[in-house]
Image 1 (cartoon, rainbow, N blue to C red):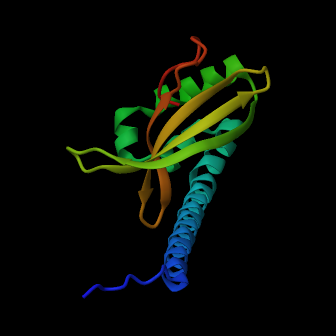
Image 2 (cartoon, helix red, strand yellow):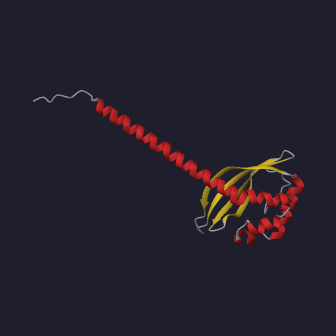
Image 3 (spheres, helix red, strand yellow):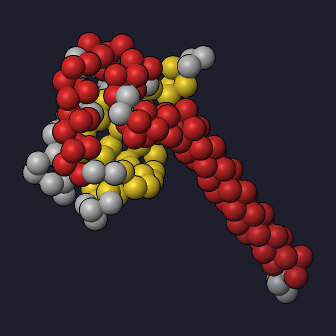
Length: 166
């Protein structure tokens, strides 16, 4: 006996389309959630670390920035005198800091030590027109907020700018 094949059903087609739309909707919601979390973290980094850091540097209070906005590990690695001297050199060389913006933010870690940090890439602009990137590794210290644990300059930095610490 020959079984008759049934013609294509609109119900099956609409189910496929509905499933596809559901997947697209879930992707949109997921991307929105991730972007929202990234924006929250960027705001926290700016509020808890970058803005206070820049205010202290502009005020000429590098010692306070070193004492209050760095981790113990950073302070052991970079003495306060060297840090303050380099901040002074940078300010003398480049003058007034214009806006510093966060260009990217991503989590990172070290396999051997288990150290977790946020890698924060910032773009620095100075009144004399010099621009360069600086990457900060910030540790989220419970009950305190983000603190500087390591830093490095970008590739296209004027030669006169001290490498680290500052």
